[in-house]
Length: 102
Image 1 (cartoon, rainbow, N blue to C red):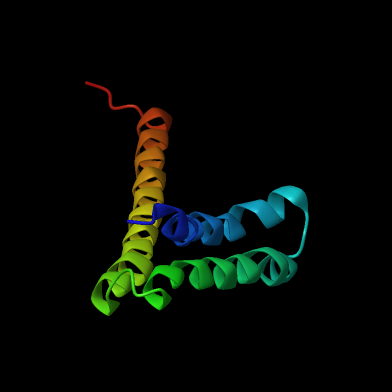
Image 2: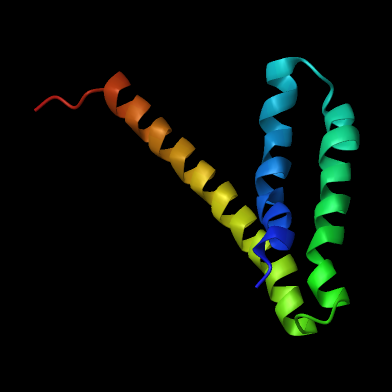
């Protein structure tokens, strides 16, 4: 399989998630970051992911799973792992802020 064509679309969830973190850190407007970084990256990675299908190296079903469902699963795992991490950190902060006396 041609992983070099699919790697950018598999990394897209991380680029999309960076839209939450990077603009405030570097002081750039989120709309500009989306317009000049996330948007072009999405179009380029989608175009690259479609190359094996256009060359008839893979079928439509395989293309859909690799190009659409895998990045979505990665995005879901990324978002819910961050939510779980924040919940864990919040629970730990509350535990240390209000210690239980026995």
